[in-house]
Length: 186
Image (cartoon, rainbow, N blue to C red; front, top):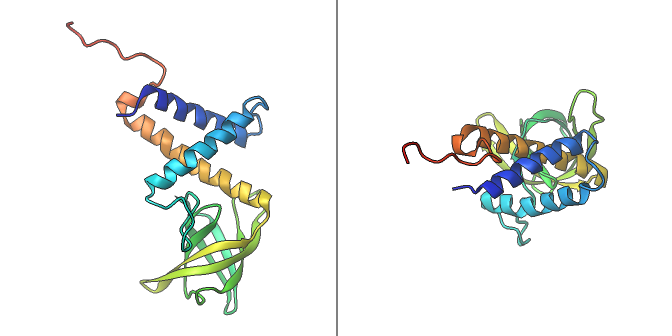
């Protein structure tokens, strides 16, 4: 059972995130919001059954399923796709043919119509054959810090969307601040 304190914390976090995205989160709240992001990340990593400590290339960032247009510049030419999942450390996408593991490739992510694309280099770390294509996983090698921040904001958008859906779908979770009424007839 989710406690009311946790429900309140999650709801407040999502509110802070929306204000952060909109550029209206107060400077007095910004440190608490950033700390909340740091606190939530390892919890979500555990929920994803991922390792927090780095060993043998273990994933250290929260990944979310998000369809983001991406273009890869490969030796065989340009490959356009949609991400299957994304994190601040990398992405996976379905393409026709994946280059060999370890290959460096340039990429461009298009986070929105009016947003400047994110460009950089990535390294292919895995490929899984699918029907008629390959799901390629890559880690970011060369990407600016501010671009990682944009990706992290996208990741937390997805997280807050899931949190809100969870809170709406559970009647006992829908009202984090109102007390539970006593049972009738008592």
